[in-house]
Amino acid sequence: MIKLFSLKQQKKDEESAGANRSGSGGKKASAAQLRVQKDINELNLPKTCEINFPDDDDLLNFRLIICPDEGFYKGGKFVFSFKVGQGYPHDPPKVKCETMVYHPNIDMEGNVCLNILREDWKPVLTINSIIYGLQYLFLEPNPEDPLNKEAAEVLQTNRRLFEQNVHRSMRGGYIGATYFERCLK
Image (cartoon, rainbow, N blue to C red):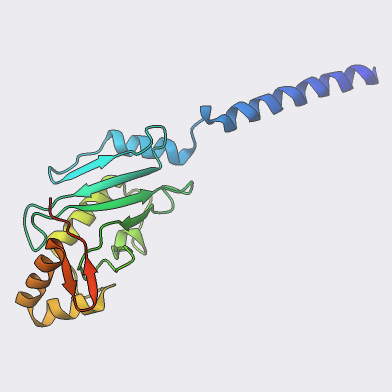
């Protein structure tokens, strides 16, 4: 009798171990993967944006390319990397600008100051919300909440000089001691 119960238990343990192996093998999608899949299926990209996946099997890591068609940054090409964690949608994705840009809300390391990526994040927000937020930063840079304080100060005090600095940086050149790679499309 005791042997019968131990055999049943052993069989049960083997089945659950097999299920765990197949579950971690990528067959079962996480909540974050399911939500990202839904967000991507419902994307409504503006004509100035393009999204690409370096690895088609990895929806949690992708790139967004923004090519503004108006404003200070018209004609530029800016690449952002998205890293979506397992806590998504409860935690916002990590977004970095891979293109060095003279912008009050993007620092030289590519960190982005966008309220919905920080304190104003809510799980109801989507990848689409972030894309529109990033696009808006290029249309209306916000000098009130800067990461690049020097660019913000120039924007507030001398709009014409700010515009010249943006164009010089996008053509590839120095602003002060900082060199910017060409980022015109």
